[in-house]
Image (cartoon, rainbow, N blue to C red):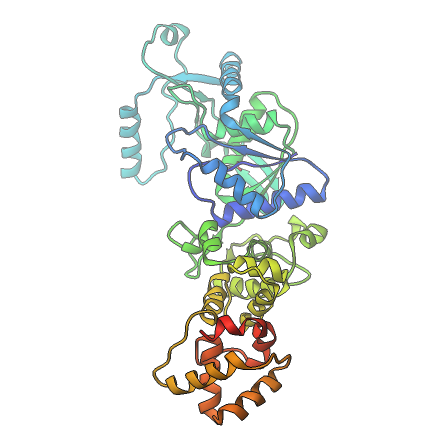
Length: 431
Ligand code: GLU
């Protein structure tokens, strides 16, 4: 069983989408189930509607799943398992107030040491616990032995027992922390492999410890994907527009191109341009590089052009707001100077805009008059000869105005390439 576990706390980041894609691909390849778990237990940070948005993005990218679970539906199990850990003396109640903890965090900061909980409540007697009326959290007992695991991408990972403190499982309001809910749910959902971002690497020993204390024996395998860096070599953050899937879609990048790009970076692939279905054929997590992948918008633009060229002309026409196959073909020609659906749309919209030009006002009028009255020509050469003949315009005084009249601008792809796709719409175009 594979899972993708997004938090409904913000817009989908390309890193999240990459994680979802890799999980989907591996589940498909290995004929296993794939579930979505919306991690909604941090109610303070949840944003209403983000869960649906995430599912819509997955659908748009062709990422199919078997089931959607909400972590909040498992709250009673989180609670029960915390109680079990208390009874087994693998966890303890902690009454330290926020103020006291904050003071300790401050002094750790002053001494430039990493803050770790000091186990102040570890050895409270039963009566000290039972008679205490202050709010309390439940903490796991920190590990006594070093923890290690082998990550499919990162290799052998070791965490010294000293690096992990007695961390919180249940908050004072009895909601689970991320690590606890995640560890329990991966167990309840019978997950066999977790593919996620490397920002979670240090959570893995904690989650393994929780399941060990719960006496769960199944070994869950981990693969932590390297982070994606921006062009300055810094981690792609919300401040980088291109980190947002929504932004990329709004700019007019095709889901198939974004998919291609996210599978391509930091990977060894047999070809540069491919579809998701093709990637399912050859994908192997072992080919993913250990080091961070670098985001390069120009490369994505290149892939977008390639996917536009390969797309169905009618579908493409619809994306730019037209309903004819011809205009989808025309859109493909414009990939020579435009990379996104939006950029191409603005070129095609110009073709259908009304044209004025101070410089060529006279010529435009002459050409307009002739075209509006002329017979239909299948080929551009015939069309051109007829116009030259009737207008007596020559050289630049012919070609420039003709281009302006047909495309709304003075430069662009060859008119002979454009003509076959616009010849049926000349009446609308020459307005
Ligand atoms: N909700 C976590 C996130 O969005 C999931 C981490 C995980 O896959 O365990 O980062």
